[in-house]
Image 1 (cartoon, rainbow, N blue to C red):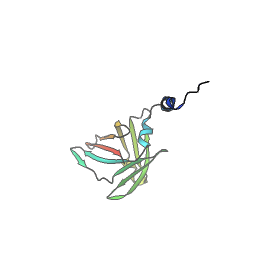
Image 2: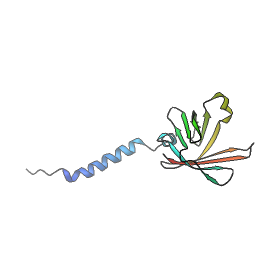
Image 3: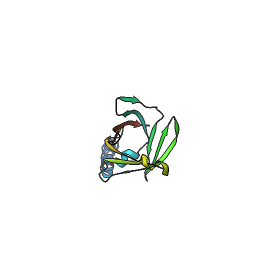
Image 4: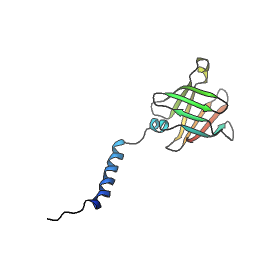
Length: 136
């Protein structure tokens, strides 16, 4: 009786298992991508050419709808966030009642594992704002 050594088949088995695990997880939703980690802002456009943002400016979207903005020049700002039904727009609302008028709806122009690009338009004020960020 001959027994074959199972080691040569091990890489094939591991690849097959990895493929099953990956496909059973399904594609990532935008919620998965947005909440996977905090985002460091590297460019901020305000109705004009890009202005370098402080490397300490961080956007942190948490599961459950909590939002934290960390910036060099002020204390952390905590609020809430939520997507629209098809995850093409994200609404960010500051936490303080006095700031409710600062609620902003952002179009999600790009959201991948490594890039976040948001755009908000305030036509009544003639302001267009774009934010580009990468994982912190």
